[in-house]
Length: 59
Image (cartoon, rainbow, N blue to C red; front, side, top):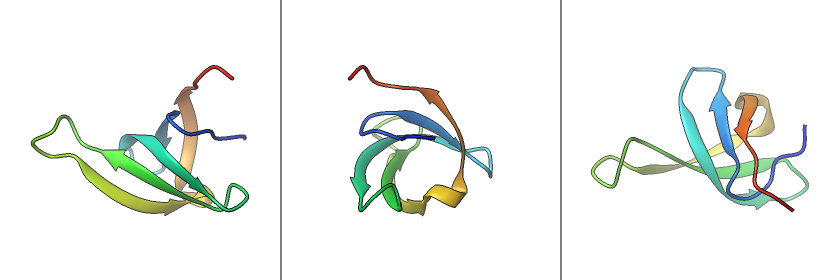
């Protein structure tokens, strides 16, 4: 699975978020999760925590 900046992904724990940054060679990502500005949070995740890509950006 190839993940790009701004893709929307679902984590294995059920949370969904948007990829803000891809670090290294698909090894680590900064993901923004939350329902809106009132509870947005940036988290660091690895490829192993991602269940699937829900929406991908165009190349």
